[in-house]
Amino acid sequence: MDKMIGLLEKYYFVYLQGLWGTLWISAVTVLLGTVLGVLIAVLRMSRSKILNGIAGAYIEVLRGTPILLQLYFFWIGLPKLLPFLELSDTQCIVVALVINASAYIAEIIRAGIGAVDKGQWEAARSIGLTETHLMTHVIMPQAVKNILPALCNEFITTVKGTSLASVFFVGELMTSYRSVQAATFLALESLTIVGIIYFLLNFILSRLLRVLERRMTASD
Image 1 (cartoon, rainbow, N blue to C red):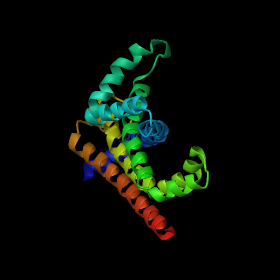
Image 2 (cartoon, one colour):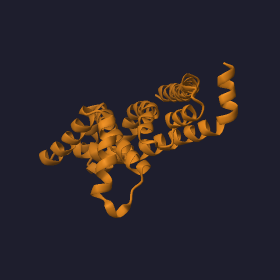
Image 3 (cartoon, rainbow, N blue to C red):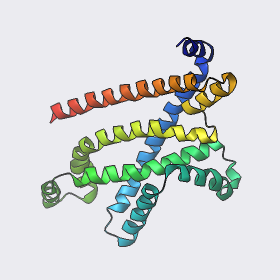
Image 4 (cartoon, rainbow, N blue to C red):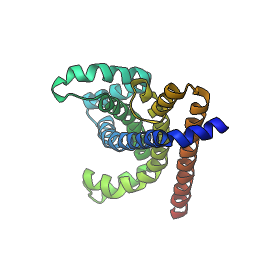
């Protein structure tokens, strides 16, 4: 315990930098993953078999392969594919996380829209609403209540998933552990500190999610 307190006193800034890295990577991943996920979900629900098939293959490949493999793929392949951009390791890993998250978020959105009662679709069409107005004014406001809790859970999953970025020395919590461990040779103590930070972070996020769910239930 004394060693852990000593590590916190001496290297607290390293852990804070790692925490900030985990938070911003997770936020960017979910934000951009949601934008891309909406597009993929729209294609997945398209009446065009080609677009539907492309979106379906995209989702199946990303959900059917390990995320670590995808991180390596983008870390190695993206700089070769786009050499003129001079992408950093962090940028490559964030792109990989965004693309991975978009596949799961696309399914969350598709399931949320699909959960809206079919009668709502039929009633809106019967009064002459266009497909755009149907989605924006009738379906999406109801679907959001189905999507938001699952999207928050995806954020928590993403927070834990960013730990894999430490393999590439991207600045987040597990990278902080590796830095402190290399400097002090106190692997167990440093790992325990990072574990506690992860637990507290996800505990707070899960409690906020429960509050959100209760408010949404009460609004119903």
